[in-house]
Image 1 (cartoon, one colour):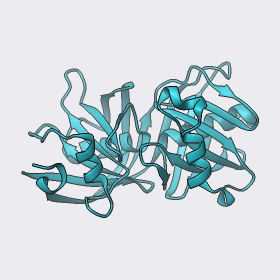
Image 2 (image 1 turned 90 degrees about the vertical axis):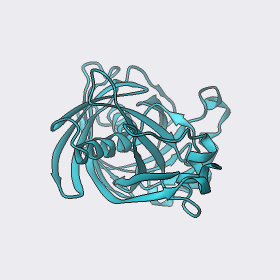
Image 3 (image 1 turned 180 degrees about the vertical axis):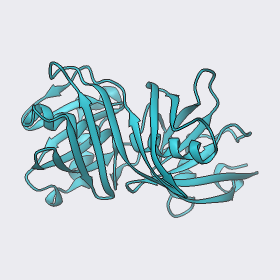
Image 4 (image 1 turned 90 degrees about the horizontal axis):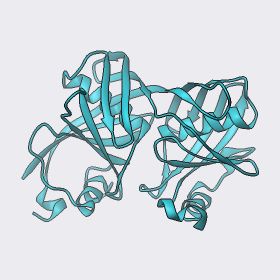
Length: 271
C-alpha cells in the first residue's frame, strides 16, 4: 500500500502528518516507530493523524516516535493546525479535540509553507515542587529543573535518569526539562522527551511547563515568557489569580511544511 504523508516542523520539533479523512492502514506501535525512524523510515519526533470529529474542525491523535500514543504535543498541535489550514479545513481559528480535551488554535500568519500559530493549552490545576525543581502536567507530565548553565547539562544522561526515576514510574515516566533564567520573562530550555528517548530541538508542552515553573520559582509578576530552545523561539503566556491554577495558557511560535511524499508501507509495517 502506498501512503501519502506530509512532514512539518515547529521550532525544530518535526512530525509526520497523515490525513485521516482518507483510508489509512492499521498501524502498530512498531509500524509507527518504523515510520519515525531517522535511518530506515521518514524520520520524526512523532506522528500525527488528523481525523474528522463532529462539532469540531478535526480531531488530533498523537504518537511518539516509539509508537506510543500520548495525550498532547504542543508543537505538534500547532503544526497540525497549519496542516489543517493548508488542507482548507476551518478558518483562522480552528477548534479541535485531542486526547486531553478541546483546543483552539489561531493562525496568526501564513505565507506559503510557513506560518505562525498560537495554540490554547489545557489548564494547569496543580504542581509539585522541590529544591530548584517542579513537576506539573501541561498535557503530558513534565519535570523542570533550574540550572545555572543549560548548555553544560548532559541532557541525554541526566534526562534519562529523571525520565525513568521510580518517583514517576506509575505515570509512565516523565519528560525532563532543564531551564536557565536569562532575564525577566526570558528563559532558555533543553528537553529530554519520553517516547523519543532523547533530546529534541523543541518541546511545546515543556516550554509551557518551564514558563509556569519560572513564574512560580522567581518571577511571580510575569505571565508572558520568551522561551529559547535549540530549534528556535517559542512564546508562552497565561493567566493566574492565585499562583495555583493557570488558565488561558497560550503557546505560540513558527510552524512550517517541509515536504510531501509517498512511502510504500509494506517496507515499514509488514504488509
